[in-house]
Amino acid sequence: MKRLIALLLLTLPAAAQTGSDSAANIKAHMAFLASDDLKGREAGSPGYDKAADYVAAQMKALGLKPFGNNYFQPVPLVAARAKDKGQFSLREPSGKVTTLEFGKDYVAGGDEAYPRIRITAPLVFVGYGLVAPEHKRDDYAGLDVKGKIVVALAGAPKFLQTEERAYYRTGSTKLKAAKDRGAVGFVSISTLTGEKLYPFANRARQFQNWGMSWRMKNGKPFSAVDLPLLTGISVAGAKKFLGARTDAILAAAETAQGAVKGFDLGLTMTAAMDSEVKTLESRNIVGWLPGSDPRLKGEYIVLSAHLDHIGITPPVKGDAINNGALDNAAGVATTLEVARLFQGRPPRRSLIFLVDTAEEKGLIGAEYFARNPPVPVSRIAADVDLDMPILTYDFTDVVAFGADRSSIGPAMARAAAKLNVKLSPDPMPDEGIFTRSDHYRFVEQGVPAVFLMTGYANGGEKAFAHFMKNNYHKPSDDLSQPINYSAGAKFAKLNYEVTRELADMDARPQWNKGDFFGVKFGRQ
Image (cartoon, rainbow, N blue to C red):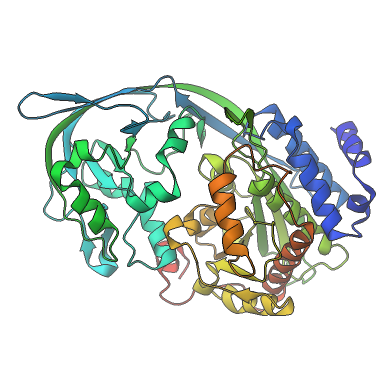
């Protein structure tokens, strides 16, 4: 390992070694991490391991300390992918059987917790499947789903505040509501909004990608909810479930309240799906910087960024390597640059720099760290997450997801003001961004968090739309994009400033009184 670290350091450009130029540093890091040689950095792959060795070498060069003998936290994984397309059919009371068509009606992936699925059970439609007592909303009211398969619309109603909507649209939240009421399986139907954001064809193209969970000491995959997610249904396929009511239901789902009444579908589904399962090992990379204040150095601010991407998939225009330049070589490069900016100027609280694995598989590496941290989780004061900054334009605003839910908000405002960067509200509430990156795993452990996204001003909206349509989770997210490395330097400086604020302020970040996530998960 020492020889490898030395070799990596010798191959870095001068700017990256001296730290004299933030833009050059970020460019150098991204050039390595997004290269074809790393084959898309899929968790558990040789390409990911090469990237992890590189990040560890950078942490050592930046003077960060390891927890223990090295910079690695082993993350045991269980992976699964679909052996085939599966078989799904619907039977009417008359005995008529309709076989669903893969890629047109449904897509099913692998399931590490349920490698062999054989289920036949009646279907009950539950609208969005929303159970939100604070809004006096229960989509299961009057429905009996015990021993049955729940069919629910994907997403959550638009009347919910953007970050709370993200919580209610997560699979774990939806599956728990169904499991608590005795369901034996779950089927999700795309909405019109969902189809626009995540075209069904893309999901079908990637159906044999490996899914993952972290492996518990008993060898079983960790799962927050013990209920199989059987399949996802397209907008076109919805008619085979909802019949003549389909168009009215999908239209009602797009309204603010999304008040779609559930009903017994009068159908029985038979589902058969087999998964290929394997165990593998991956690593989080963790370094820390001791704080300078004798009273506060026992508290920690975490900076998190995921290193993995989605590896090699069926080709698009002849290219099968998903380089993940912006998602998330850019975030890792920014994290390393933030660490450099702290050199020689330690903050009052200690800092932990977490570069984690398997985010693309469901925030797995961050979840493993948050549940198995090297310091007591009660001493983790906040998380600052860096994921997929769109660095193809000179951003002048950012969206600070989660900041206003805690005392991070005022600190974020002070940091943004130093760089003359405006704070903007979430411009894409349908995306559910707040629960889709690593900071959310800290929120689930009661830790206040913030995730910065480059904003829509000054050409940002066009840049985002172009990236999401043309490059997101595609081989074209590579270094051929018009990357503005000076914008990367500004993004690093902004994350440095907010981290500095959180690490130096007298009182550690606290959830706002009565905050939704503070009540759900916090330490109030």
